[in-house]
Length: 257
Image (cartoon, rainbow, N blue to C red; front, side):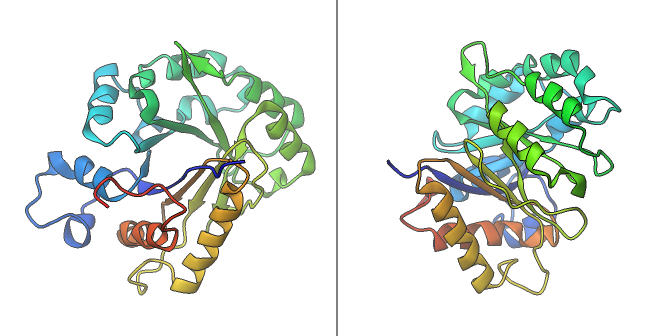
């Protein structure tokens, strides 16, 4: 079996501190996505969790980055920040129908991040997972779910996600419960412990360990997405570039390389 593609990125592309340590001095703000797309291989868009985007916006993002780049989208909070997730069907349909298919092959997974107070209820979660469509207008949709309450660390939850073809987000966080299960159709990791004192966010031995994990996940054909998201966010691009370098020959390389 061929190895799965490994893509490494950050969250978004508009962040003031990156204009001091990642983007070249004087780079026009309108060129930041293009620059990020030439130096990393994926990004997770947080804005989609808060508001619907226009089809033209997705098309513009698509046309700004190389064909090998992927956009992961945060699922709408209108879907996930509710008492009963089983009642999110209309909101899920609205989210999927907003025009995200304009991203085409550059569309990565959709991450449905749950509130940290949401506890695991087997019937509710099974019903929610059943609401997530496999495709829309001929474009394949891949879904990941990110629980943040320790009650989800339950074999029954992992079994439900696997049966639904939904990946459980591999999380590493100082604030929320960590989940290390990676038994889904692809792997979606959110690394949230960048340190300000580390030039590459994570010390080299930890980056090497994450590189080994990514290789292990990809060896059986699964795609792997890893995002440096929180912690000392100003270090996230350097962390992503360092992990790409550690995976040279095994990961998708930025278009500029």
